[in-house]
Image 1 (cartoon, helix red, strand yellow):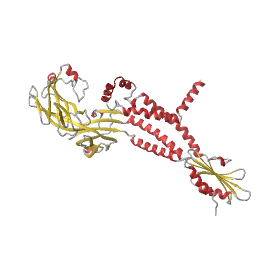
Image 2: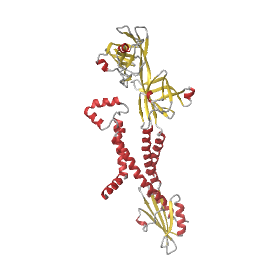
Image 3: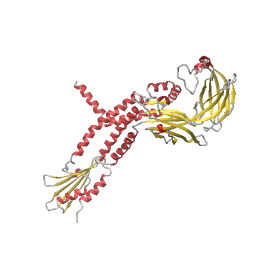
Image 4: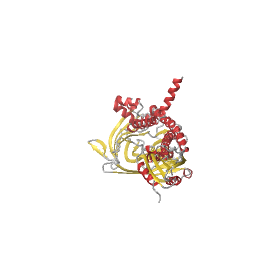
Length: 512
């Protein structure tokens, strides 16, 4: 039993040592690197799947090590918790020791001041009392105490630089506060992404069903989101001659608080680095893409217009892929409706460029939009009860023969094609969509405050030096006074020599 208790005691001492805390902090930073360098499943599951497929056994091995879910992995959480425990166990004793030091008087004057790194002596005509009064005046701002020694000598012990340890403790407690704030933010915060069409498309933060993807905190169930609405009026983008994006701006209106009851819309120019802050949330502009506009005139004369966003497959030229789906109008029989559903899939080029008959995009701005489409007719599988991506059709339906391609053609804006049953598909053009991210983190103010305190505490601990000085005045036989001055830097001696020299000159100067 004693051996077990000794093991626990030694383990606790090792865990709460400062070197252990620094090692764990380094491991935490090292462990976060895969989260920055590798795709994360919580952000983009599709890219994770592509990365694993491209890298074979190595990609699967990293997946088993949870390198695509770094911040939710067991090993990252273990390092996080151990660092938290280590900091708490390290800081509490240090804080208590610091409290006791602040209450204690400066240490006694050493018997032999000449052994100190800094020392000076002189004989003065002033009395010991006058020397002590002069020393206390010169050391104003230092923590000092005057003592009378057994041989009749008088001395002053002075210390300065306690702010160094204060800064050190502020730094470490602020680091601990950062860990707590981040943990609480993950518990009570949430983050969601949604695509909103321009020219009047709207989004309301009223429930998780309004998002395309949603990542709730551990204590968030999605039923009490901060209420606000956003309406996207227009989108503007500027590009360099090489196609690189120069600026994005979405002209939006928003409602929150009392505006939701009065119906008041407030304008806001939403830009990439200028999020909208409302109702305790932040709305970011992440990016944009294009929505092809297809008009389908069915054989019975009815017209349907489809405006489903397509996703970029080339981030430079914004060449996009997707699927726009239609139900036949006027068909009440479920079986017949399933057999005559339409899907338009293919490639959208904002600025068309052809390599032979192959369509490609040569510029991200919509200067000459065109599409290369396949038109499918049949059962899309949308009534099967299984989830289906809005960006593609169910290939299993094609393989089973339930969905058949009936046309393939390139269309520029305003062009159309006619299917075998007389249905006309017309490409009307494109409009913009914007990708918005809603972030809710009530701990962000605390994170900012602790971050500032971390920097301030580190700056103080690095710039302030802990040092001590002693002055002893001994009456001489001839009526004069022998004055000794000694100094010691508790940490780094660099820079104290000049300060001590100035102190010694002032204290050993003969009064005229």
